[in-house]
Image 1 (cartoon, rainbow, N blue to C red):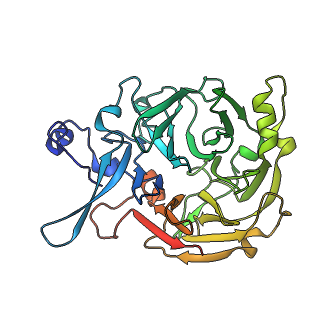
Image 2 (image 1 turned 180 degrees about the horizontal axis):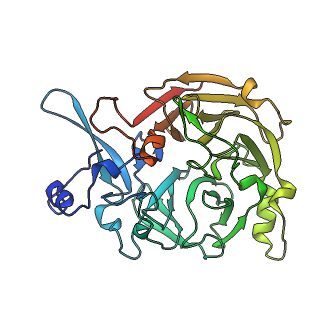
Length: 373
């Protein structure tokens, strides 16, 4: 990866001061606005990430080809590492139909470093950016009892832009679902057996058995049905797909006296291959099967009956070990409603310090598309 440098932010300065360490920079999140602008995240999982939220820029090079660089969004000055009030670590974001970008501020950073002393803890939050003006209209930071300042990983987000309610996954510890209402600025945490990882599951990717202790991520992928009536969610370490009706979560969110157990309202929908990101589009649920290097899809909705053999009922739409190892994030093209974008990043190699940066094994990261019509 490389960035769009300017006079105040130069490649030479960032490299010499270790503010840019290329091997530590990995694509994760993606979203595509209605004008076809592509936005990506480079989480600050390790040190040396110049900008964590970016717009993909394309320029012609002197060889007649094109070059892709990452231009900090909304600006360089909003992403200064260690500066209070600036973006510290963006894992994911989504753009809604009202042209608002909902941005996950993880808060904590460097938690993929080998030395635990490198971890920097700070509050997790939500930024909302007006995509027409590029102004930040909302900055909300979660209370520590909702999202812990030192024991959390706010990971993925979906938005009901009719009710202005956002749902997040916390992919740390026992995991959780987080609900947030924009109008009241109230948030609530839901966790239980369904958000935990399966400690017995052993991940095998491209013939490498990573055992049961390498990828232990709990609740991670989350998807909202088109009618906004149900959430699907799943773990990375585990094979179970869950569903919960959003009205049950909202009832508890809006009534502080109402206490519900997530385990009492969640449904087990079926068994599938483990996945990271998931996406709902046109009556279909899509996920990237981490052990298969493939995108799968299945017809399902907010009221469908459970399908115990979900993976068998699903359709494999694309498969490639070279280009689709660790499918991380999915996004719907707001300009072309039947077009799905996704990022692969070989996170299994990055996380275990076995990623090749010589080019001998090809590109480590890909941005791919597929037509869902």
